[in-house]
Every structure is written in structure tokens, then in C-alpha cells.
Image 1 (cartoon, each protein chain N blue to C red):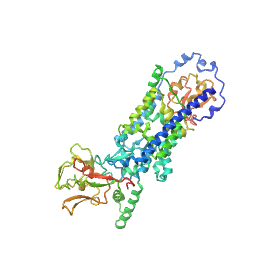
Image 2: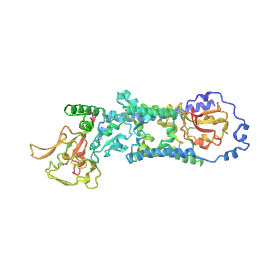
Image 3: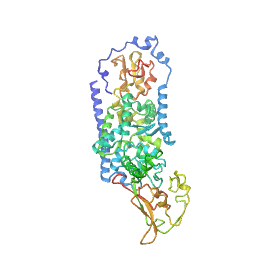
Image 4: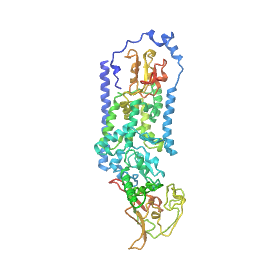
Length: 277
Length: 310
């Protein structure tokens, strides 16, 4: 009996040793790799974090990979990363070329639903509260039927900062002086969004609309934020009318999704160092 | 796991005349055949397990707010639930990283709800909800078949190995500032694959399953899984339990053969029981296989303190 116990203890110490060594190797390896290369996401130029994402270093550990943000998004813009997508497995991202965040939920639902605050609602709450105070100064906010959220959401949307749009002058149709006629992404493109010119006020497939523009300005007319984010302006040097990105750009990526060139002529440069608000 | 009744002096082993079959005046074999073979609890459990995971899938597919999210974190009718080991890792890193105070109320609601459930029901989650458990059960059947055919040998380890992994993955999380465990956690991987579409990570699940079939029976659940270990740690004084009645036991030990954690049924061996009734410890997953197999109904589901009411 005593010998048996000794044996089992020795076996335990042996297997525990192997397990501990394996774990140490795994942890050490990953820790070293991340230290040398930085967080995976900062090495990935294509994807954005959802609105309100906090700084990447905190994001990767505080996100519990539950996918609640994925489920709540009405246009299904948010996806969870798989192992081969170059960002941390299970974390949410938006691939704007395929499906941009068009703000058609009108409430930043993904941020509100996040249980760990990696999509942090605090700044939005503050911005919304201040906007309401401003509004009350000039309007009657106690009027029955007044929905305070309609005022708050405008302020909340405007402080989203997933990235900032940047036009590629070499391929942009407007920069070449060209117009656009037809369906920007073809008939089979599945992305949906709510156009500012929409009559229904609901998101609709991009493939349903046919555009006809003398000078291509889709990125400007379809922008959910509007003239604070992107405008058509006449370039003083060349005299061409070209899109110009302004400070109000939230990086939502609708412009990227609607861009009709083969390879998008406008990209969102993610904000990777600080938070996305 | 830690069981004080195990340390007491055992009761005197039952004489042959005290065995339930002797009392009935028949042989062990005859007595054994009097009880019809049943899979009642197993079938019920499989139904619950599949239903819960289906509910997750359907909630996402149809956009219902019934059971949103995945097994790492979810919302049942708008009420947050959070996997405790996952939450523990987030807490561990965030304490040292200064993020602790930013954790939301919903995070704490989810954490404490699951914590309360685990205190009341111990590892019940493992066999009634975890989707890997179901796969591993089929793996176990194959494994048993190969062992019986003498194609492979059985390899067992010390059950305390789990705590090496439990602490290990917490330390990895702390030092890498990344929840590395979630990359290999079968519960999360399968749950997310079911809900959001298959992942490449399923290859790992497949490899793990093969390892369990070919080398060590139920390796992950028995010796590695920190999620199950968390439920076991918090379920030390669980109310939902399996109750053992020494009087009705014939010491055939068939229950230990089907059990995922046979050490929890230590008292069914002849001359080991220290009391007339025993309860299984916190490692027990309340899967009910032993209840189904027991010929004398010596093992039964019970809620402690509710005996008289039920």
C-alpha cells in the first residue's frame, strides 16, 4: 500500500512537471512573440475593431469572446476572428469592404451589450448627456412625445472613431475625372446599408441601387455622417472635384463598401494606438 | 474532492447475508436481472444538453433574445451569464493592469449568477450543458471498445493534475496579458463553432478527441479542463448531489465503471463506506450514469435538505 502511494505520488509529480513545463513553454512562447511583434491586431491592416473599442492591449484580454456584439448588430457587420485571420481568435472585427457599420441601429447596440466594456459605453453616455443638456438650452425637452435618444445618438455617433478614411488618388474615379454608372459592387454583392437618401429609412442591399454620376461621388453621398465627415471639393491645383475627408470621419467604412473600383479606392486607416472613441 | 467522511474509520464490511440480493433470497445474478436496463437520466441529460446548445444557435439564427451569446458569456432573456473561469482570467489580468474598475455591472451580475449556480449544483454544468462532454462520451465508448478488444492500453493520471492546469492557465493569462486558454478551450470553441459557424480550431478538438479515444479515457475532462475544475472548486458544498445508500448496495462497482470521476464513488467498494449514507463530492458531474446502472437503487439524485419535502 505504502509503495503504491509512493508510486502514484511520483507519477503525479512527473505528469504535473510535464504539464507545468508545457504550459510555461506555451506562455513563454506567446508572451515573447507578442512582445517582439506587438499585439496581432496592430499587424493587420484590413480589419477594424467595432465602435467604442478600447486600446488593443486591454482589448485582447478583457474581451471574453462571447459574440454578443455579433448577435446584436442588425447589418451583421461584426464577425468573430478565426485562427487564420491574423487577429486574436474569437475577438470581434469588422471587414468594412464586405459589410460596413452603417449606424442604422441608431443606438450603438454592440457597445451597449458588451459585458466586459471592451466596447466601452461610458464616453458615449457622457457625450449623449452633454448633447441633451445643450439641446435643452434652446429647445423644450420636456415636451410630451420628445425622444431624448434622438438627440443623444447624433452626439454619440459623432464621437465614434474606428479609424479615418483615406482616398487612394491613383485609382479614385473622381481623381481621374471619371463618373460612375451602374451597380458599384455588382449584382451578387451581399452588403447592406442605410443610404442617407433612402426613402424607407431601413438598410437595403447595395446591389439593389443603380447609380448614375457624372463625377463619382458615392463615398460622399452615401456617408451616414454627412458633410462633417467627407465632402466633394474642388482641388485648387488641378481644378478637379474630388472627395475630401474631414475630421468628423468616424471610420465606419460605408464609403469603402460602396466604392465601385475593382480594388477599393478609399480605405479606413485603423486607429490602433489609442481607443476607438 | 476534499471529503471529510473519507477520513473516518470505515464501517464493518457487510456480511453476505446483509447483501440486498440475499435479503431477497435470490442470487446476485438473478437479483441483477430483476432491474430493467434503463437510460433514463442519460437520455434526459442528452436532451437538455442538446436543447441548450440548440437554443443558443436558434437565438442567433432567428435573432431571438432567448439565449444570446455563447458559452463563454451570454444573455438569457436579457440577464447576463458569464463563464467563471473566463471571468477569473479577466479579473486576474485586470487587477494588475488597472482595468478592474472598468468592468461593468453586467460582468459582475453574470459572474455571480454562474458562481451561485456552481455553488448550488457543483459540476452539473459539465455533463448537462458542455458540448464537448457529449462528444467525449462517444469517444469514451469507442475507447472502451478498443480496450476490451485489447487494441490499446488504459492510461490514467492523477486527478489533481487539473489544478496544475488551472493555475497554469491563470499564470499564462497574467504574464502574456492575453486569455490564451480561450484559444484551446473546447467548450468555447465548440460553442462558437455551433453558433457562428465552424472554426479551424475544431481541428484541435478533433485531435483531442482522437487522443482520448486512443490513449487516455476522457483525458481533458478528467485531468485538464480548468473550466470543470472551477465548477468543482466552487461546488464543495453543493446541494444537488448523488446520495448513496449502503444498505441497498451489493458492491458490484458497475457504477464506478461508467463514472467519469470514479474516485467520487469511493464508498461503493466493500468495506470502504464510513457512514450508512454518503454523498458524492464536488468532482461529480451529476451525469446520472451511476443512477441508471445501479441495480439496487442505492444511488439516487437528491437535493440536500429537501429530502423531507420531495
